[in-house]
Image (cartoon, rainbow, N blue to C red):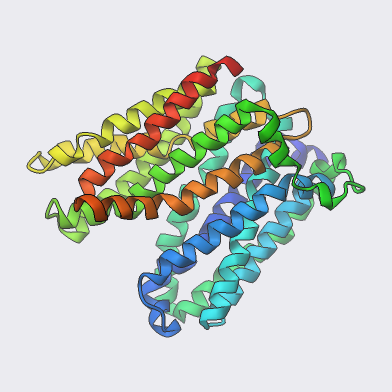
Length: 394
């Protein structure tokens, strides 16, 4: 049994599953909004605030997650993340606005532990020549979790009510928290039980002292802002400016998710082949910008051409995650992959929080979603420029 749970395959399966379940927790209220918001007495735009609460909490916890993982171990840290997600889902199921807000903060805090714990394990086990692909596969947990939420939760809400659907998530994730206990012997042997928690924020010091890691963090913030804006506004753009039906626009949104999932693996594979994560991030940023710039001129294009451009944009905009996390792991000092990942993500999540708001401000100024996407191309272009300069850190 020890041999089974100590290998890369078991670790990759477990960390990907944990990522998927953590992501499913993040999507509970956004997916159940048509059922939950009337019962909570909240307007539709409240979901934007709820998502911001999740990622602000995730950013705060990510900044100290490396130290927490160093003291308690990645298996115990993953268990805590799953337990926190389960408790957060149960609080959402309680059915009050305050419990939903508290549950969202707890889900976000738990989400902030998930990646540093996984990076600590995978950085030990992944062969250097396949590091990017390993991290890319793990990051597939994000679209898998989003798809799980989108497919299962509405059906559960119709069957057992929206609160019952949230409780189902809580029960499944609580079971995962217990199941991850089998990895404690294999994963937590290198933990330092005497590590003081007052030094848990040491990951942020890594950013100040290592320009390469700081570059990854800033690139992540810029790319995540563009990625979240695409996910938030693509359907609205297609319906309001291109006169597509909501059903057709929703189908394109699903295609964007699929393209992004494929992109995570494809870009990770290319990073392994070229042995340069920064080079791949540079190419990815340029391509994302190139796909955004023609959108203001795309009204009147054949629908198939627009779908191809948007899918290419999704392929690039969501493809950076695994490469960035693998590069952060590579650049971290020995034994500090969790610190480095947490610090990078604490900055990256700032882009998640601010990106859609920045897009909304641009739209308010120019009055066009397509033009806002074109102007927002400055973010991936800036990220590409940082990656080009950071290639010296190979």
